[in-house]
Amino acid sequence: MKQYLALCQRIIDEGHWVVNERTGKRCLTVINADLEYQVAANEFPLITTRKSFWKAAIAELLGYIRGYSNAADFRALGTKTWDANANDNAAWLANPHRKGIDDMGRVYGVQGRAWAGPDGQVIDQLKKVVDDLRQGKDDRGEIITFYNPGEFDRGCLRPCMHTHNFSLLGDTLYLTSYQRSCDVPLGLNFNQVQVFTFLALMAQICGVKPGKAYHKIVNAHIYEDQLALMQDVQLKRQPFPSPKLIINPEIQCLQDLETWVTLDDFAVEGYQCHPAIQYPFSV
Image: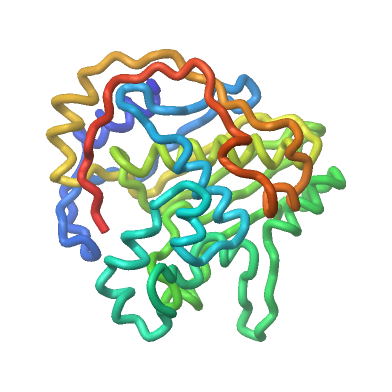
């Protein structure tokens, strides 16, 4: 919480006003932010100065792991986070590659599970990393990237959290996640939850210990219509201690995550929080 609140205050104190072309809104922006999460100590980075809906974040992560490309599949898992980008994004609605209602195109998990090269070859990045780590192997390229410039026109949104780089030292697994753009009041806690949970899950299914997760953000911003709520409400609240994430120990392999795992296999213990804040969302 301290590093989250420090980033929010830094944006307010040091940020530059930038007009975002996609949303048409102004936002206060800083470049480069580094966050760390103590996954080994199970200090789950759930925001406590407002109510945070962690289940939707984990449901979205499960959808990425399964390579989903349809908002209806994400809703079935327990999150509506892709409804707006799939169905209310004017540029995507006019895109000839859109297949119809709820179609997201080739974004995020599609790239992670079925990257399409120029020769038509399909690469399952996630499976390669899992197979290596389960064998105790780290080739310094245990990378899953959702960023495929050759297919930007085939998806409703360029990935914000675009690359996950796993590193194995002995029997301990680390994760460095890279994010090009971050809506700090709304999106960041989703991203924090997903980075933490991704490392915890990968360590569990690969039979190693989790270490730290490093979260690197390039462009961190607060939209103009979010600023008053951040300054006058959230930053005036005192945080509570970090809760713990409980993951079903029966999840033992990638196939489990692809098939039977649901939100019922995750729980949070010791979560105290202030009331929710209804920050505006920019499509």
